Length: 271
Image (cartoon, rainbow, N blue to C red; front, side, top):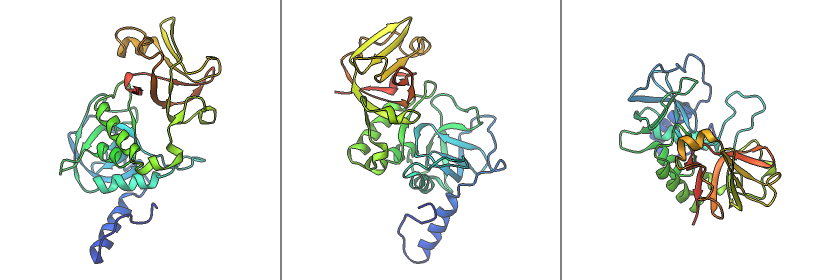
């Protein structure tokens, strides 16, 4: 898919547009192309598309589209297998941004440790790029404790795309996991649904358990640090016990599958 034009046009314009898109999604990114940004900028022109959630402006500054996670490409990582629809997501970002003057806005931390800008992008015709990718099923919501802005809007767009089975939501690789069937998913980013059977606070840390045996069943853990910063009323155990929730994050193994939650937007309480 990476080398094919996904759009249908006619005659010579079609060939020209296809060439532009194909060139824009070239994956090679050299040090010369990526110049770490010393400070945030308000705008820039999209030039090189790295993957479905990262691009390089004409100035050489790299931008990570904050708040979303598109399917990942290897990008030179040995042994890394591209996630399904990764090439399609990159092409979708190219179609939205290549050659366009983009407005950059910030809702939290502005620059990451790699010198990439952490920004929301808006096209000249008013399209919010993150919103468009989520609406079309080309990305999932991926917020951080220091970057949570517009989370409610993004989660709503993701839910709509999932209900319509658009993009990645039609692929089994991205299906929502059940809390009782996660052992093969340790080490991956997942969205998980289940009912909190027991919630407790131990030495200031909150544990949301999804089974009878906390030593083997799925658990959400919230450290005292993040409780102090984002759950100001103390360990958030009473609000979750007995509730069906949807949580997202990287799964690790610690007394069974576990996700470390760092902010409330990671955990959606479902009807």
